[in-house]
Length: 187
Image 1 (cartoon, one colour):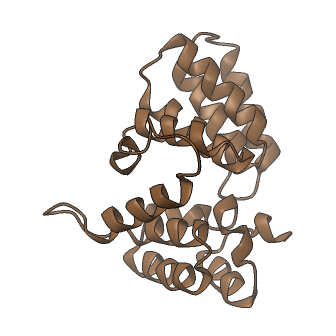
Image 2: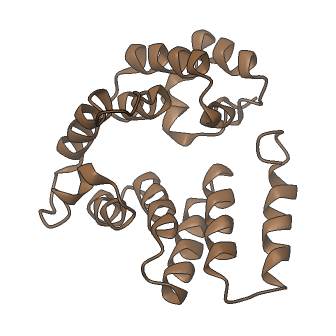
Image 3: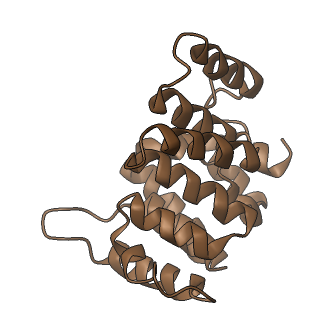
């Protein structure tokens, strides 16, 4: 539903699932996910925290909480939650708060460019990191590579808030190629 631009319906369906199980960390984290991609970052953070109250070691909920906190500008807390969510590059920065966001992103970029043996470079992830570092041209190149790589995550190109600063004709061409709405660009 998110991919097809049916944002309200996606949110309503996720909320409806709560009627069946109020104490499911999976449902709560799914609502956090939907809230993130519909740009309700406070709701995303609240739902991820609710999932973590139920199951404190739920990596996916930590990751979604980190996504939301990043968009809300709470970078130090986001790094901690990225680490709790299993992000290897965040582990080195989790206990050193205060202005480490850019260093964290550069470390993340380095790991993404040099994946462990047997793993391939994930260009969508590199595009996100480049966009977060303000490297628009590089982000667009990596998005093109992600489409060519057939990354399953490119369907979120038009709703991913990390790409908002990329809005322009070249970005919109990529979004149109994937055939999804460009919500972040006002389409």
